[in-house]
Length: 233
Image (cartoon, rainbow, N blue to C red; front, side, top):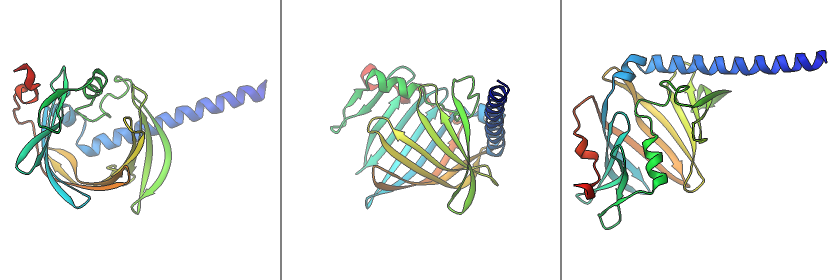
């Protein structure tokens, strides 16, 4: 009986220690990003990017507005195509003919669940869990590995540098296909008091890609009409 009690106590202590380690890493990461107040004060974000993959180069613009409005526009041959958007109620995109179409209820819910201000902010209140999974090396740097289990059950692994506390690597599984997606983040710069990666490289479904963030603007006014499903106008 004594051995059983000691074993249970050890396991409980280990789990508490893991949780404390994760919390400390998350707190340090938020502080290095710019602090919790800066993240909460961010109400909108516009990112212009260049995406290179399979010998092709395209321009892309992402519009974000708190709490969860989103619009991603890809520019191809002088034309703008909306690859995904969420207006606060409905998810939508353009089909191959350039016509808008509504997303399914499932995809709309997934769009609505996106965190505008990084999933680290108030993650416990949002129903997410974060576990410390030890250390590993990423591109020559020591990192803490954190496994995030979102409230919907989706798991994402983050590697955070032990020195800078910036995210260097993210691994996730694409739900639609079940394929692994690996992203590497670099070239961090401060914009409006918040650190952002300006270079993202990675592999998805065996295809390599590179994203260069050319500009980031935060807290500029964005009219809600920008995100609206065209069929409602």
